[in-house]
Image (cartoon, rainbow, N blue to C red; front, side):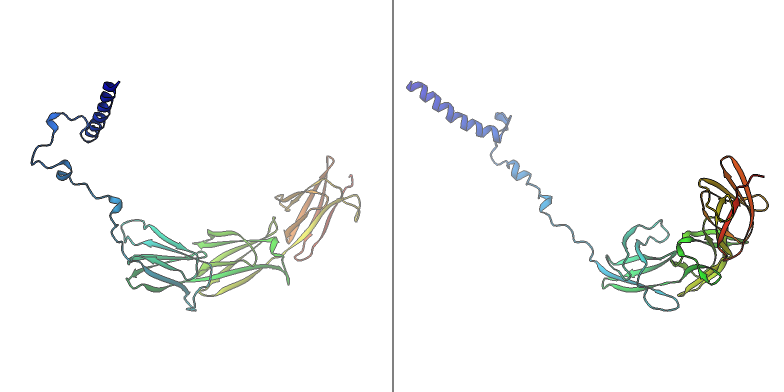
Length: 312
């Protein structure tokens, strides 16, 4: 038992010593022993610095770029409706890269000193300017050549409810007044910002043929208010057994011009249709029978149009 304990103790002691050598010289034989005077691996190849411990190189200092937009005729700052974009100025090298964007009327951007392209959009107007930002910063303004258009409709002296109107704005090209559509679906009273120039406006009252057109001029720094006067009226279509009696439900109506062109179709007991002044023919279909009635529309005179359900 005493011998076994000595062997066991020696084995443990030897294991500790050999284990330490294996960690330092794994797989090394006698030839790998340290020679006198030869530098250790740690001395021959000093450890590299940890990149995470190396401070990054300082970037270029930023400077403030403050911008505002003014109208040509006023010189006063525009207070709203602006979108600013700052692009990298590449000259003619290619499409510039977008660096910053803001919807504030007078934004301040923080950028590295250099040359930039400042773009501002105001409604349908877009203006750009090259700016050079110094290390001390820059305050600059961009002149916007823009006006505005505000539209309404009337019949005689009576204003047409805005919800019944829709406008389309065109730029004339050559002899074509509707050469290029700027925007359609414009609502009455809506402020549309446009570059200075002449525009062709089409106003539609209802969803039939009550249409009015006008050429309007937009001037820099001014709002052009225009009311397009329609010559039309709203009529109520009915199929009745006798004048003034109750209308038949589920009647299919067609409104035709004297030449036979279909202007409007509707189904119901008494649908309403807005029509330009003129002469028309009403066709009413009910229970497999067809009835007709000629009628005339006078501007501003709203009335019922009755077709009499009477067999010939």
